[in-house]
Length: 77
Image (cartoon, rainbow, N blue to C red; front, side):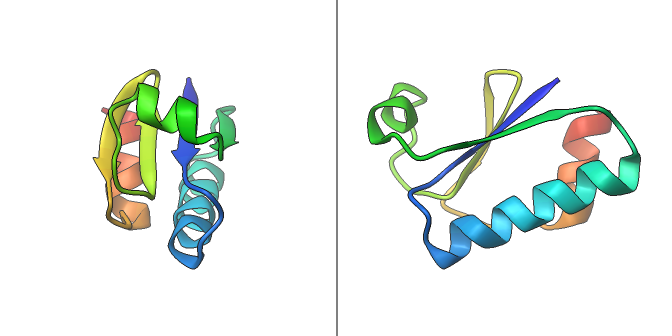
């Protein structure tokens, strides 16, 4: 599984990064987490507002900060 965090480094993007890492740690899974700051890659996903979260190529949220519980639900399906 691969999780991409879309954002240019604002405070909201950093909070999403923290929440994603916490969710992954709490689940104890080996998941690749990547921070995507390249605006062209972000736009390729059709995301116009950051932060965004993409799991295995599927945009889960854009323009909002998901909490740890929500992220864990996305990961575990």
